[in-house]
Image 1 (cartoon, helix red, strand yellow):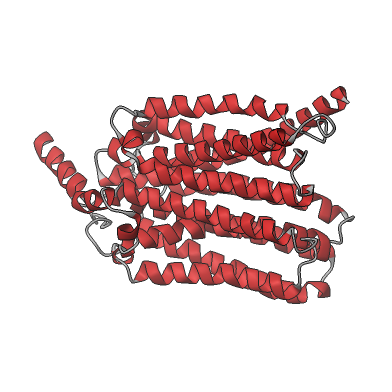
Image 2: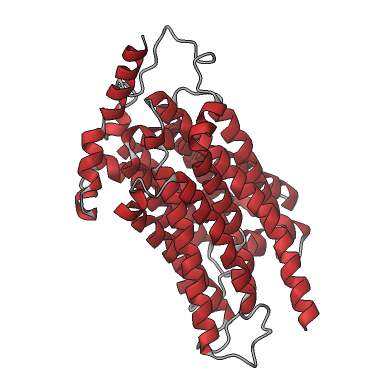
Length: 432
């Protein structure tokens, strides 16, 4: 019996092994000719795109919808972040306990995003007809639905990626990195044109419609790729004789095999959520740009570093057996050492009269390194999940399991960021 079970596990492990080996040694151009790789890449973009859309439209909602000085404008961002992170944690936990129907979750979650941003596109045109409280309630409901849709898509996509192999996990990570760079680059360019709050209704409408189109394109490509057909393939076929509840992979089993990887994911997100605190409060010293241009520039630099970190994660050094999950966890802990360095730079203009352009350049390098390490650790962690597990059943279950630590890291990091806002302001006031 044991030998039969081991044989089944070996068959599952080698099912996509040849495809994984081909991609592992392929150039980026060759990977982009593989429709499955491109599908996972686009799914990665679609996972982060809705969140970036909400963030990028924050100034529009505060300025045009809630008119800056109202209570709704003041609490919009904090409420949006709280609802998004907490609902993501709860929904990811709920999904991870239901270890079935992974393939359909991808399109179901993307369909939710189409509906959410389709409604938001209409909202932009008609919001003046409704009172502020109703507009605020509607937007928070859309944030909640979008967060749950993203969690659903990510749960299914990571389950599939774990089955197909580390290269496909890395493809999702690359897609998320691309989705991070594009909005920050746009905001940086806009900062040279005018006040980013002065966004036209047509521009915001087009922005939301673009999110709808990205999700629809993702659904179409998923349906017509090998990943879409996996709904009926033996890779994801359920045994009618099994009981989904009693045959579920226990969290204790997954944690025993993945503890260092999921702890790396959690730690990385907790530390990374401190980045916006420093990015928004560290100002230019001598470079020929104002703060309204410098801050979006820093966000762009960080996101470029993040994308680069994800791209190099497939290198042999990081994927070798010597770079163990434990070393990945130590790497994530060592990254905490970068945080005190942010206090050495121009927080709240305290170095304005005493520093040179080297202060700006040093800060830019630090933010780039902070971004590189973020993308690198996350990609390494997700890529190493599949090889640590012994069956496709465990690999699929690990998709939801890792997402619990991802969303928990984001939630805990967002709460910790409030403490760092207080620390930054207190330290700067004391030194002043």
